[in-house]
Every structure is written in C-alpha cells, then in structure tokens.
Amino acid sequence: DAKTTQPPSMDCAEGRAANLPCNHSTISGNEYVYWYRQIHSQGPQYIIHGLKNNETNEMASLIITEDRKSSTLILPHATLRDTAVYYCIVRAPYSGGGADGLTFGKGTHLIIQP
Amino acid sequence: DTAVSQTPKYLVTQMGNDKSIKCEQNLGHDTMYWYKQDSKKFLKIMFSYNNKELIINETVPNRFSPKSPDKAHLNLHINSLELGDSAVYFCASSFKGLNTEAFFGQGTRLTVV
Image (tube, rainbow over all chains, first blue to last red; front, side):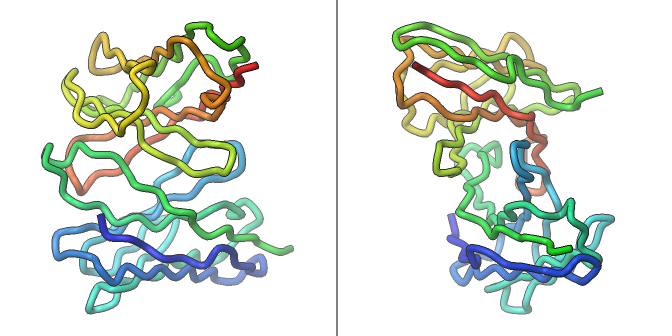
C-alpha cells in the first residue's frame, strides 16, 4: 500500500475553511485516495474519495494534484462538531480483488476553535 | 435504523475467559470486517469476510475467530482472553471493490482484567 503522510494536528477557527493536507508520493495509478474521520469515542466515518479528479459532496471537497502525489481535504465551513482525527488512506488493489480493508495511519487531529 | 450495529458496547471480563462480539449490517453489503484500535489509537484491520469466505487474516492470534452465519452478520469469537486483548473492536461493512465506502459500527470496548 502506498504510504501517506499527514500533519499530526491542526487548528481551525469555527466558520472558516479547514484544509487538511496529505502526501502520498508513492501512489500508483489505480489507487484511490480516501478520507475518513473519527470523532472521539465513535467509529470511523467515511468522508469522500477520489482517483484523479477533484470531488465534492455534502461534507467536503477533495483536491488531488495533477501528479496525484498529494491531496487536500477541504471542510468549507468548519463547526465544532468537525473536531476529529482525519485519516487519509490510499487503497491498493489486493490479490483478493478488492475485498481488502483500510490501512489507517496516525491521521491529523483537527481541532476547531470557537 | 443503525446501519452497522455491534453488541455489546462494553465488555469487561477476566483473563482466560472466552467471549463473543456480535455485528450486524442492514446495508446489503457483501463484505464485512473487524478492526482493532489499541490504547495508542492505532486502527488495524483483523479480518475481512466476503461471501462467507475469509479474505484476509492480518496475523492475528488464532484465539480470534470470525464467524459469519450469513452475509449480514460477522461475529468475533475470542478464546482464552489476555490482558493485551483489551482494545476497542470495530465492525465494518462495504461492497467489494476499490471504489466503495465502508461503514463502521460504534465499537465494542473490551477490557480484560
């Protein structure tokens, strides 16, 4: 699996956009970039994923650089409830044909300040 | 309706006991997983089940055995519990494939005393 590098922690003011970076310089052409978050004492929650193009959904936007070696998760208007650990994950093909699980790193602890 | 539900939420037991954690998903997914989150908050996959067949076993001790009576359930049985088994265990489910999202349960906090 391609490894990811994220800052251990970040602060963001409530109401502002939170931009979370992720480096994945060894990513392969068929590997997807996924973002999950884990709010304290809860299970991980899916946010968004993409392959090459930028993606947007009701929760966030995902910007992937053209060379795909890095990406940024954007929470457009952060609220206190967005305080969580955010995980950037690169999913590699598995010999079983895609029934593999997720390889979580240490993630970024995002703290939204009031 | 909860998409992925685990029971119990908390489990305290003595060393040497055998225990089970149940997981059910109502999303129609064909693949289910068990993850372990230790005291340092690292999340690691333990098992993956697709169509009632084990796909991965990430070198967990054979005291841990997943059992899937049907596609909607994946239970985790643990024999001869040890102190080091204390952790939060998460069940998850998804469709098979790279372009799919996984849904997680709320976790079971296991404490072995």
